[in-house]
Image 1 (tube, rainbow over the protein chains, first blue to last red):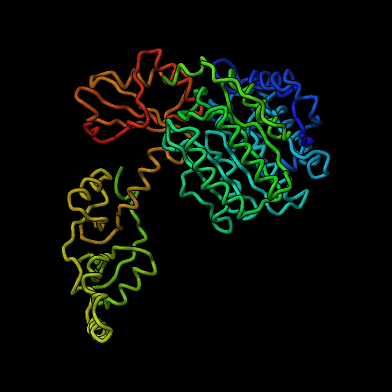
Image 2: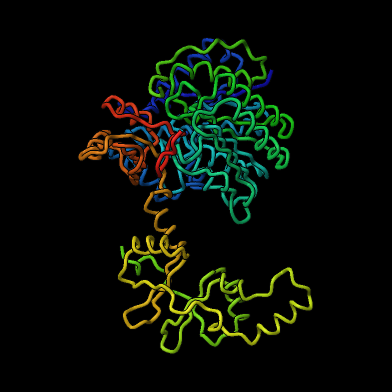
Length: 334
Length: 224
């Protein structure tokens, strides 16, 4: 069994988004509930949560934007940029804690205190651009983590794997020209899904050309298409790039029961994908992997999805999964 | 939206007396396919296209000797010998819609833009139009397209806009497929939100019919 870190803090619940918003604190409470009830938590190493130092946030975001975000929360303006990005007075502090916790996870990983980790954080990060909040995201958690690995730990080759059903526009743009960070994303085809980027012809630019890879999935597709794309696109890219550390933008909204997309990935499909990622990470990156929560909004399926996710990180034999139950989240897609 | 707001003003033009080999080099170096041809005082006299040039060049299937001979003869040929004289032009005061419709009608990729005195002021190409439409569709702003089918009658758009605005969601653009099917139109709002589930749910509750993304089409829906 692996030494798997778990990052969670009740303060991650303090970022409130209000009625009608899918990115709610309950996402984390159901996830942590499942990890606790299944007894997995006792097998995991707790990661301390501290606010991130500003110098690391500034490696990705402009000081002007950081200031605008802080001020909007202090003044309780209700949103930052798009109305999508609901904020409350605690959002800024929560976002700092999320990043800080992830950086602590990286320290523990690089010091050999853990083999890998799952970070149950809010708010999510992969849509956040250098100078703008988008799609419920404020600080780009994974992007800051990658910069931290580069600058604090001199890691030369970092691979970001983003399986949130929405393309991680922010992460792609931040590393578009960086030859040392490979960004792979599998998501619903951008003509049908937010944010409208991540087309297969987007491959990075300048020195980073070829270091961005997008696999797009059409509405209505599921396990089979994911297996094809992961096998044809991700695995060869992994073998060629040979990362030293893998960061996962773990979004669970491609699930059939999640109404945020038209993609029909099953619970088993998610497990299969994560098993492939861990297998490749073991082969090429000595198993060094940090998984960071992005999207995933169906409270009915998150518990099982995350229990499986953590079991795979721990290297436990995957337990038998329950048969798919009808979920109320499904109603809208019909 | 006038052409002079979207045209390329820094246009490269050539003289009628220029050798076509020189003109070819300019096209290759600058990566352009249309060279307006001007006489003194920037008066437009024609346009040289890559198609005009290709037609004048020796065929690749000729022998080396024949090709060398052809190239030798080309050195004496000038732009005015092979250019399209009196090309279709547009004025800076015409609109992007004019340019779009004229391109469709004349099946060309670019028009020289000339003022009332016949002086070259710029060039408007398919590329300029594409850039303008990519921008106007909002494709560079994070958002998501949804498809709604409505009856082809007055007031439908207002209902859609009202329903979506109630949720505080902004529009990046709206496309309308006019010939969706008899008596119906398909409306495609590009919404600046990641919270698409909430929008869809709200529209369904209001009685709208959402379209399966795999059926989306801007032209006439193909008959099955």
